[in-house]
Length: 473
Image 1 (cartoon, rainbow, N blue to C red):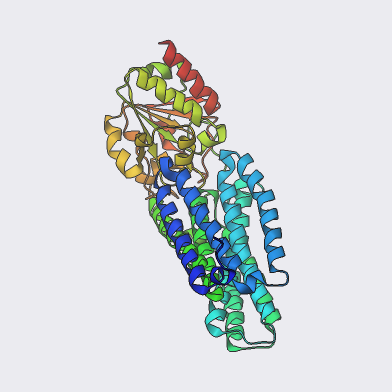
Image 2 (image 1 turned 60 degrees about the horizontal axis):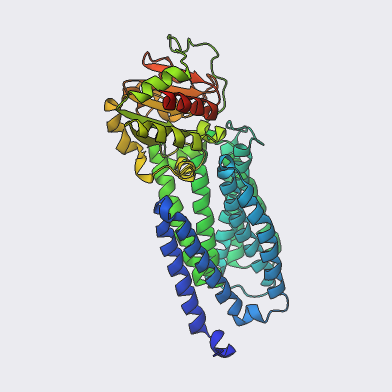
């Protein structure tokens, strides 16, 4: 039986669809707590979005608009043609910048909606209860879009990863914010120059988004991505209030709340406040010393054969992955090494620092892709007490998150940042291409510790060679 069109377009039926949609959003989000349920959670949330989309189409002013259905169809075609190939072809090492880019698109869409709404109401009445959230969305969405583009450029290597500061930048940022706020107040108070002031808001917020993220170094990028994600969510929720769209309000608040919580957690993991991160100045790409004299010690190089012997006769081995593992795409090789060691009766665990990599959960995603059992992954607070009884810790491309200077050098830029305390292990083996520093641009005393050995070379090739030697023993 075909339901009557009147019923399908009724307010109660559309509201019911929205309730089902955001119920699926929340249920799908709960599935993202682990890799085993993450794919299913994504599919459930995507189903909710499809239902919300249908509910929006059923609204009379949308369905019977002269050009709206065609614009929606065009948006679907363009989004599908660009989004699917981009998502399928992106390398895992480029996932952080992909996340930044997609997040920026959401903020840009919100800013454009605010602009279109003001054009639609030009010369007429714009209800204040819708105008205020629309103005908020215009400012925050524009900041999120342009800030995310800068984050993408830094992560992609298009822009330098080091902090980029301009003279008097704090004052410039303050002036730009005042322009945004003043323009919003003028618009809310009522003016016939709506087009001029809304463009002023969008342009000032665009420059502000660029100026805020440029001084932030690469080491802070995971926090920045999470913060901008929260901005996009809050701006989307504000747009939902302006458009009276329940699903958009709920989805935006979920993204905004989860992004805010994650930002706070990661800032605590770096022992830095969010305002300090936004102020920038941390996380450059300085050249590290080429010699081994940075700590008055000597770097001890080792071979794959020696590493294999150490690992094979250990009781507990902890693997601490970092961005170097991602760059080398060594996660599958690491999985093979873990299986080879377990076949010899060695207990293997993975130490995951909250900000290892270039986005939240970067290491978890890579290891899940390689089918590493989730119960082998240990968060920082959980694994740190295990290091004193660890026979060998294998550090693969993790630099700043294992740097003991964060504990014992008060003058260090990362002093006070909680780290993986790998230096408490009986032995440490570090896999690196060279003695180059991490994103914080500082030397690592761990490399000169007498218990540390360095295995230089490509991480994937090195791990594969070690695995072959383990299997041959």
